[in-house]
Image 1: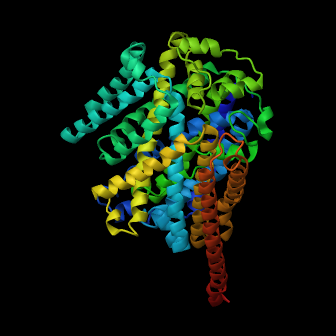
Image 2 (image 1 turned 180 degrees about the vertical axis):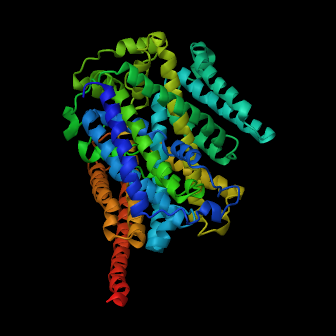
Image 3 (image 1 turned 120 degrees about the vertical axis):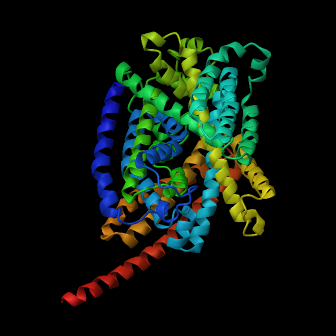
Length: 601
């Protein structure tokens, strides 16, 4: 496969067949979704949280919530191993694991009146497993914020144009939120907001070289301090003022940018310049230190299988499902769509020359040790107007790859700098939207846990409690952000994220065993669970032994080692609780079968 169009056609065909056949089988046969049964959105309808929503509207909001930076950055980082491991894991992981995980978590939450995964775990596996799940969720969401924010750090450092464009989205979103609050409508303001965001990108060149441009030319350490401070205010502010309007505006950008990328790939059909496998599949790469397995499966989470989706699938979405059959287009279909996003990101990265990719995505000293010579990067740096060397994290690599594809269209060949900065803003806005939501979720979890010690903390409307929990959440992930590099932090994020996916599959297997007509259907969750649980623990052990507790490693950090050990221990506790529950359910069903058959004898 030498050209991108081959990847796109293969992906679309495989995902379409999966949706049509495996999706129908899983929802109708395994889960036995029955539209005659009333959903929680109708039973508990309150016009605020529980609201019956049309399936395609629901599918859109669910996809916008799950498709954050993960499917954009993970495949770019994993391209270090070559295009083949990433492409295979995206498709196999999504079809066998991700689509099943997202659908069964949503189904399980709906069976428990739209409650969170920790509450579902408590009901299905017992109080110990429920408490461990809640604690694991807090660790995971905190690490996720650090991992995603590190991508923004390296995209905005020494980039006044990009920093200005991203900063301007804050007052634009606040203005939209205020307008909607006062008038009750956002229709006219939406067009103005989108136009203002575009104008911010086009105004970027004019602030370079000015006093404002000097202020916005920030070092990585400065950006890393600003982000958690920003997150505190974003978390403390009402959701309607910043979080919701910026998420709303960013959804238009998401659809537009990836729609344009798909069209660009189809018509330009760029050559895939990476080999199927690189020399780094055994480890020692400048982007990711570890070997292709298990690191391919923890580097690419969103797009293949992601535990972060469990926060959405047991959060807002189960309270909006109109009919039980809607979970197929919403959860199963949403995951398949995210896989396509991941494949497109992989194409954008591997369409670059390998030497250019490593020059962007490696520290200068690490790239020099490779002995490679850049090919197109000097030209791209000149056209974009930015020093592109050593901008690790994946975001800049993706922006350069997408810019290279867009500017091959004759009408756009002189707009490289504008395309690049727009894509950087597009990535940063999505990541910051996820940071807003994720930090707020962490705040809720902290308040819930501390509320067991001091009851008023459980009240989400208690201002002192909200401020204390917000500070704890921001300081926690801010420390992780400033204490490591993309290699160590993204691996920590990958391990924690896939551990959460393992927990989702454990709960899914439990509920299938309890409700499905055939016990063998449990394998739909057990097969991906077996692979993922082993992968997570091998990767976690490798990072602890070779990085976090290795004083010679760049990512040496005993604190990260402690977090990893606690998370892996929580995973084993939850699995042990599940094994006991499965034994109990299997014994109960073994007794139940002859009792049902007796009258017919």
